[in-house]
Length: 314
Image (cartoon, rainbow, N blue to C red; front, side, top):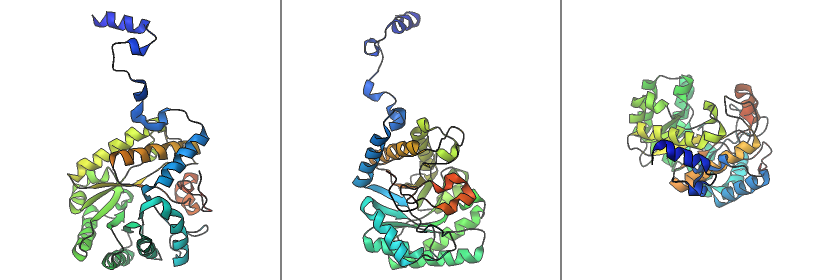
């Protein structure tokens, strides 16, 4: 049969099952995840609750109460209260700092039986960096850290040069044993800075289709490509997705629209893929945080699975 005749016959048929092609109804747009299909909002909420109650791999955690921000001292009591909310749903928790009470997170999490990806916050203040590095090393030696992250998005913010970052990574590796040491940044930074990838035991990649303006419809496929780029840069090293998520409110970026419905759909698709492919993923984030509005606009306060009053959104 000629291509023209095949096309004509196919166009005349309204039944795909009768056409000579590999069409299967259950596979229609299956790679796009739940984003390709319309669902009532209550159904999306129910599916999300089910996934959370079954347990997700990990979550990014900040313990600030409403009215607090980085620079304020955290207490053991507030860390314990918030971790108690998360504990039934997670196996791992990710932290961002080892000072100002953030060190309590790894200590209390381990006490609760939660594994930790503990991070030292690095920036352009070299004195503060020393305190953070010392805090991370101390937590590792206490046995409170399962994966150590030396810095978060330092290259993205252009706070440090790659060679300076590598020196920090090598220092921590020299001081601790039995704990994989890596660095967290956007997935593409590991391609752009192979010397950083080479210095890490483990690749810790942030993957945000939203921040790259990707429409929700294509977001799962987009994130998979982000992950694959990090895998290639890692040259066989383990790769963890250390941040991904979708805001429930705020401004749009390109085709990426922030909404409660979209946040549910993204959460469902991401968690199903993570579980099916056994890909360690830390979802961003645990609680909404109003202090982020100053730097990120209204969208900055809307990334949590729980709201600022510690109530689950779904």
